Every structure is written in C-alpha cells, then in structure tokens.
Length: 306
Ligand SMILES: [Zn+2]
Image (cartoon, rainbow, N blue to C red; front, side, top):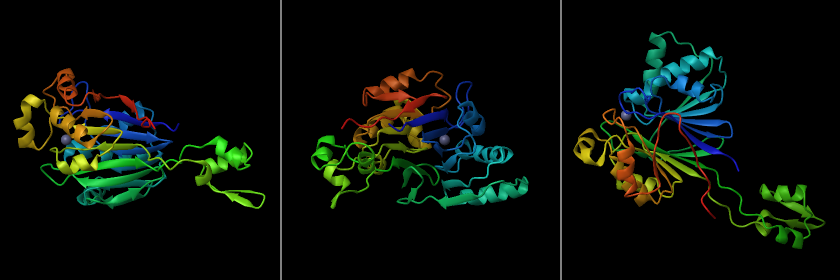
C-alpha cells in the first residue's frame, strides 16, 4: 500500500507558543509533498521532519494572513541555498504572486529554481503527479480558500480465478492487467475489466484553512478520509469564533459529521488554550473519530474498508 501521511509542522493560530509553531501541514505521498500553508519558520520544521527541500512540491496557501504565508519567503530562500533546481508549484490567492515579486525584488532574493504560480479560484482543479487538488471558497475575514487533495482512482480488486479461467498465466501478464493494461493470449485480448472489479476512489484529505463552518464546505469535504479543520476556539467561546471568522472545535466536529468524513484532526488552536484536551472532548461528543493535531504529529491516512 502506498503511504499517504499528513505531517503537522505547525498547529498554533496567529501567535506561536512554546509548543506550537505557526500553521503548516505537509501531505506526503511517494516522495511528493503538498505543503498546506507556510507559517514562519516552516523550512526548519520541514528539516526537522526529514522532508527535504528538493522534492516535487506544491504549496497551497489558503489566504494572505501573516501566520499562513510569511514562512513562504524563508522557505524559498532556504530552498535556493540548498540549490534546488526543480520548479516549485504554488497555488494561492492571486495577490500572493505580487507579494512574492515585490519582496523578492526588495530583499534581492535570487531563486535557483522557477516558480509555477496558479491563482486559486473556487471550483478550480489542479493536477500534480499523484493528486487532484480542488479549491472552494472559505468564509474568513479576507479572501480565503479551502482545499481537497485526492489521489487518482485505484484499479479495482484483481480476481485470480477469472484470470486463470481466461487462460492468463500467473506472472508478468497478471501484473500488466493489475496496472490497467490489456494482454493478448493467442488471438484473444483480455482486458483489465474482464479480471478486476470496478475502480476504487483514491484517498481524500481536506484542509479548511481559517474559516467559519458552512454548508458549502460540508459538501466540499464530503467523503474525505481525513478532514483537517480550523479549531481556533472551544465551543464555549463561540461568540469569539463568529466575530473573528473562525470555527470552534464543536463546529469543526459538526461539519465533519455532516460531510460523512472518516476522521477529523483539529488544528489552529488559539494560544489561550494551554491544553487542548477539553476541546477534543467537546468535539468527540459530536464526532467521535477526532484528534487534536500537535507539532510533529503524523497521521497515516488508510484506505476505507471495501
Ligand atoms: Zn490563521
């Protein structure tokens, strides 16, 4: 099984704490990285987690608040110091490119690699080596986006009995069929659909960024294997969440339940909570399969039971 791992690099909100860095999450699959938001010092967290600076990487920026984006500049500089040559893909609000251009010029930052920037817009779909990335509008105090990263569909279950019945000998030809290619047996052609079940959807991970909950996001995250959601406040501080356009842990749990998600990771905790165990308890009353993200935590995203 190909591993799909969410690695939490920073789980605080606007201010870092002794235990939590600013928001950043890496999604790792077969050497490819999706980096969701870039809080300050993100390159150090990447090094700490052994993720490397020269991989196939796509940076997804949810919105242009400092805690989510100021780390990008340092990351670009450190990547250049490491002599990165591979292009770096960046998806984010259209003004992100302007900010990068202006600051790079003012600070005389010369990059050793090209940037491929794509503006985020609701409904846009991007494809990387291993993922399809979808974009939806989030509800925050400024233009903000949420993302879903979905693996390509997997081939269906392989039925050896059917292959044998059609005269396909075990070995190379079986693996060809499992990879979705036709094989020839004498004058007959055997298609993958003759010996496998229907294709199975890939795993799906959703990330909210900063947002109020909404029916739109519940639909957007439908069927996600893992939802990573804004949990700035406890349910007891809902008024603050409404005022500052964030979510509470209970609202995150309600959304995960409505979306039919398999698992929820709470993140982006306000520095006012020195312990978040009570926030997890509140959320679990609504959506039992909830965890609180912490810096350095890894979540292996499994396949749904078939
Ligand atoms: Zn934030």
